Amino acid sequence: MTDARQTENRLAAIGLSLPPREGPAYDYDPFKRNGDTVYLAGTLGKENGAVQNLGKVGAEINEEEAARQMQICALQAMNWLREAADGDLDRVAGVLQLKCYVACTPEFDGISRVADHASKVFITAFGDDGRHPRSVLGMMRLPQDAPVMIDLVAGLKENESGEVG
Image 1: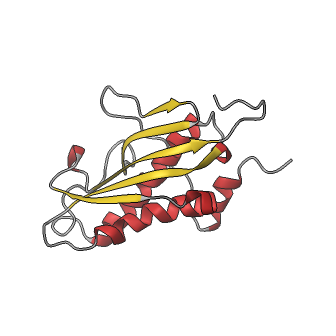
Image 2: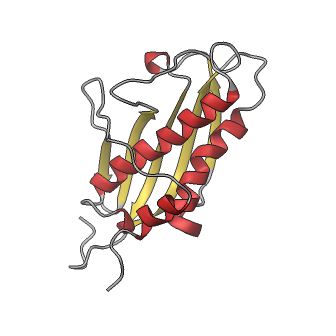
């Protein structure tokens, strides 16, 4: 039998761990499963119940802080994927699509560099299965004045009893 935490061990190998899960601030579902597909709602880089540094990248937020928060978005998304996979991240078959949103000034030209920090989390965690098609969008404003946000679609593998659900 293999270690049931291979995915989390791969993250730990580069110094990452899942932070405490942060729930949605409003009345919506953080994810929805349809068969072997999981749809995640927009996920902010919350720490201790809130996004810690607010504003636009290129104004109040520098690129390094945006990259750090993008990584937190991805790790928070991993928390929701773990819940959708009945507590076992190793059941995630792969990331099918990733959308990264960056609230930024019109002059800021690093939105893809910031998004790379989310992509790296998924590729590290899931190997080739973490590679994904991606859209990166520069926005005027994001919920709660967060500088970055992601949403994604992922696939699940069957559990030990042969069921996806």
